[in-house]
Amino acid sequence: MTHVITRACCNDAACVPVCPVNCIHPAPDEPDYGTTEMLYIDAGSCIDCGACVDVCPVNAISADYDLPEEFLRYEGIAARYFSGEGRTDYEQEQVAVKRRAWGTETQDAPLRVAIVGSGPAACYAAEEIASQRGLDVQVDMFERLLTPGGLVRFGVAPDHQDTKGASEAFARTMRRKNVRLFLGAEIGATVSHEQLAERYHAIVYAVGAMADRALGIPAESLPGSHSATEFVSWYNGHPDFARRTFDLSGERAVIIGNGNVALDVARILVADPDELARTDMADHAIDRLRESSIREVVVVGRRGPVEAAFTIPELLGLTQVPDLDVVVRPDEVVAEGPPDSIAGLKAEVLRELSVTSPTTNRWVTLRFLASPTEIIGNGWVEGVRLARNRIVEHDGRMVAEPTGDVEELACGLVLRSVGYLGSQLPGLPFDEGRGVVPNVAGRVVDGDHRVDGVYVTGWIKRGPSGVIGSNKRCAQETVAALLDDFRDGRLAAPAVADDIGPLLPHAIDHSGWKRIDAHEKAVGRDQRRPRVKLVQHDAQREIAKTVG
Ligand code: NAP
Image 1 (tube, rainbow, N blue to C red):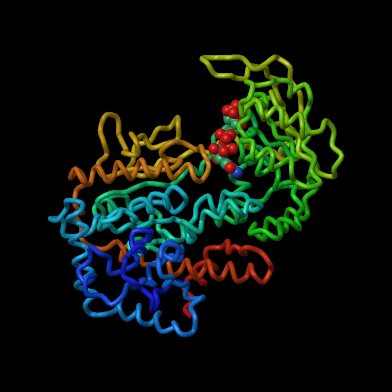
Image 2: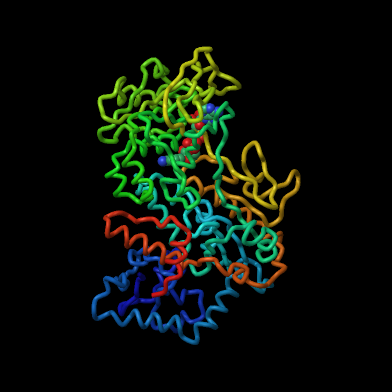
């Protein structure tokens, strides 16, 4: 879809500066502005945001699907303008204008930036670079999987479809003319870091943190004990996890840790399968959850409710699930928290909205002040041994300290939800303890040295914290550092002029992803669901290659 300028165009160009993708031409600083009959919208770049409609003083702009019959010809007129011969010269002039604005007139090619990853951190970084007004830049995004989106597709819980709305903005970024997408391109496997480094001025790693922190307790990996990240990836249809199996035949599951991931997983485990069947949850997971015998999910936090890692919106969300009690033990919710603080509110909400014994068929129990010391079981999980804690202040932080009391909690499934961890990337320094690539404001550093031209953003930069939007500020900081380095002449020109494309003959591009996306949504429409995910690589590749 696009917007179209029609007969009444007054050429005052009020629409030009509000266009976020610079798709209205000729702009006042362009050569043919003085002679043009009217302005035109480039259908190839327009993202349908409608910002131009709001400011047009003469109501000359309409969405193409709203175009009155008498104005239908204007679509073709704009297309002719953008395909016209004069256009080529004009584009070259534009490049020169951009380079003058950035003080890089001697540069004979665009700034070339590779972004590794396609999740929120990668998309925010791509948008921040590709949308710089006046910058002549080409951004290439590389994704190991055949579908983009990272944690928006594989992390956000399927019953939180509104959160997935962020992917609309990311899709707009990927549609930009100066952004290319390479799916099925694993840096370090399909192409090396060095091959990227010689073809791009700068590389931004935005690969997230997909490994798990370990608890370091006996029998942690006993069959029946899994990381929550595995379970999340499984129900969200991540191809690497689609064949995992989880035993849901016991009546109780225990989740260790009480961050938002733990609450997501708890909610999903006791959700009504008919509700889940209206989401984009992977079909294999819906089928298994229909057979589940789990009635109680116990979420175990090592500190008290005031210190709990879950957020108030997620806690309230859990208490609002129909026909689902949230159960607490009154002796574990005694702390008050600082008056008027959000932390104090957690305890207040729990006292107000929870019960002490369940009345519903399925329920979530939030336990506090308990740390796992061992997973118990003979060849298979049969329970968890817990040490009771008290809260003490240590170096200004409230920490858990064992009281010496222990208890055993029987269960058939344990999910460890104690945080994600970044993994070492080939050719880059790594901070093992924090699971991040060492950096200063996004610039990768190795000891005292900067690794020129290499940057990080998102969880691999700052660790696994924050929600989707937190990655925007993070990306802005990294991109600001990259652009400062560009202005200061610190980015070496690519040593190899060849395009990366021939090294990735099997990669799927944006049009292939659009076919997968359209297919998933079309199947979803038939089932009244947002989409039905393709989870196998072969199926994804087949649809991506379909023509017509
Ligand atoms: P998290 O918020 O860091 O929570 C980790 C939990 O593990 C905490 O309860 C922590 O306890 C506990 N833990 C760590 N080590 C432990 C140990 N050795 N023994 C027992 N417990 C231990 O991590 P997350 O839940 O994986 O979430 C990651 C990020 O994604 C967070 O920023 C989260 O808000 C975000 N997220 C947001 C949403 C949403 O907004 N809907 C959904 C999912 C994730 P302590 O607090 O005592 O350290």
